Image (tube, rainbow, N blue to C red; front, side, top):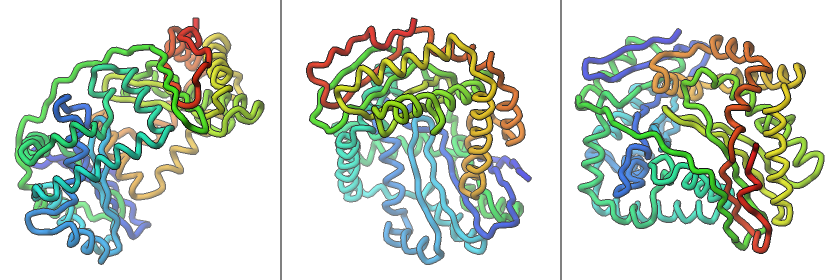
Length: 418
């Protein structure tokens, strides 16, 4: 049973009772991420997330870690393009302490100048790590080219220069503007007493300020270019993609099936034709990314430099085929069954249930029941998938290649789908 409660300050609380378990996962989801930054403070959402773990006005970073460890709990956070999440998992008997710690982190950060300087070095090393991880780097470059001059195209971590420029004043200003009650969704799943939890949340988060958290954002314009960067690596890393659907688009269910058929499973066309039949790549897959107003479908592959052209040609060939020929019924049903099984299996933990509560609220303003999703997937037809394929694959692709590609004949014409 899912319960939704609103507090007077605008804070939203979602709970799902799972009496058969002994754990509780509790998350505070902020509806702000790197998309909501200016170019001048790129990376500040992620940096503030780091700083909230460096101590509060009453707890040091070490004390926070010791307190969570002493109850056998798990505390973590992440920053995404459109949200920032803080979550904790504990035994049900330790819920009051978990709520107290999480509330303290989100309401009373210390933002000490010494910690800021130290954490700048940590985040800069994190940026360097991405630059030294080619399968991450190729996606960063691709996204920057795909949505140029827009926050969705910028790295969540920011740049070394923008991180170095952050100071206490900027962090506090961002925190006071963004960390307000109307921007938060609190979600919890597990062995919960709804009344007790509501009282705990009201006490811990009641002091969150009330403010107008609305933002005006622009829709990015897609640029379809091929960016080839020679780099001394053992493999070439390929990322090609096209525009997709926003997170609430009615065609999203058909796009899930399309992605599964194309490259979203071990029986997918790309995995079978590029890896299994030809042995050209170890890693090859496709994925969907959806935001509130735009989306993308991307294909990634890692292969020998001399195989880059062949791999791209195989990718575009599969895309043309999906546009021109309906999916056979057996393949369609296998993709739908894979999707449905993955969804059900993915919701068997308290953490995944908690995440689903929050994401559904942020994306749709209501809870999307599992049966509703499973039913929508089952109703997808071969014609639906072909229609989405025509929508996605009737124009040129964007592409990025990073690796030992010097001297290869790689041109924009490789990415044409007409």
